[in-house]
Image (cartoon, rainbow, N blue to C red; front, side):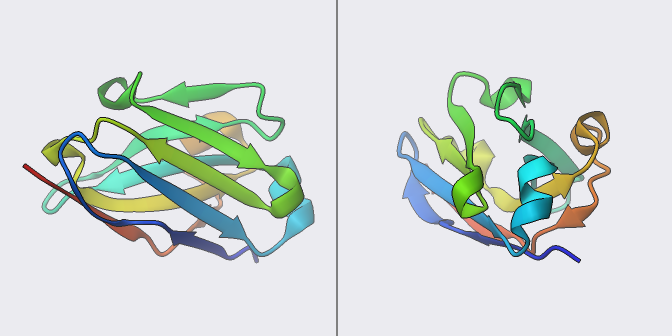
Length: 124
């Protein structure tokens, strides 16, 4: 069982930036798993935000965040990050870290593990 712990959420004004972090409990699993970020706004479905392959050679983004968000990972420290710039009020959501053995399954919303989530609130 892999535990994922997110941090870095908070309240920010529109146009600002935040960096989310996710630490995994198991180094061996983390190093071979694809990692991703999802978000869920109140009353809405949980949506894909970004994903990165185990090696970091591939990354994909949802259209609403392309050009503003960047996903990265540090396998030596079992961590994945989401740098969020030019934040908008519509980015307000609980952000979840996810890990999966299969990249396509993870992007499709079916990872093997979920974090507990961290709140991001963007004020206008």
